[in-house]
Image (cartoon, rainbow, N blue to C red; front, side, top):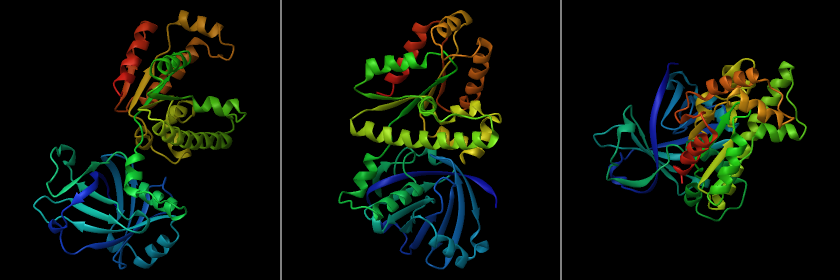
Length: 361
């Protein structure tokens, strides 16, 4: 199964011209055994099947697919029956000169949702939408796996509102991560952000500190370390989601976090590769959760020593702090929104942080 990079953009359609689509359509049932695994089984017209693995999010994702002629339909249908998250849709293909366009009209709990997809190596260069549809781009916020989860939730609750409006209102806020080594100024910066932008910004405290404060401690035992980090990753993900939801309900425009999910990879002996395995994730998946990462470097030795003296919980020597800082920087440095804040003075560092925050407001 050759692994390829799938480049695809998606729009939540408000209207489209059915006449430009080919008359023949595909009836698709699509299921996910575990939304975090990336595995998907698709049944087509109750006679063919595809099994696919996708990784990443946004415009470009890794795709690994078992060819149709190598997929046994009965086996795939059996697997589909056991999928907790599933959806059904009718797929139409665009018959114009430009190939790669599809229209998915969803059924059952997702009735009223139509996604327009454009899969093409140069889809990122598209600047003018075709005249045959209108819609809002949701490439970075809505996928079929998200819709399958929504279908599951709607199936088990009473919801009388518009599913389309629900999707539009669920688009997450922009997120900025403040990260860095010990005594880098994250807590002070968070207080300044809350003071200056509290009406528009929600700040989320460091999750590891909250968990450890409540008595759930990391361990040097290998197995316990894996369990702790997996637990912490799940708690951070869920807490980010609910914090984001409540911030949107309050009319906030931005979520600022004291550390992001993969900061913890800097404290794992095997680094990011081991962290990906223990938490069943990838760097790309975690990077996609955040729009900007502001790295605050450890201050000069004299500043660090004075701050450490005023904080009895700070135990790292200056050299140890520098080592932690370097590991964290290495974890995040390939994020597309990674920026190092200047370290020549606190005033300039804070000014640059606030400029970045203001750019999202």
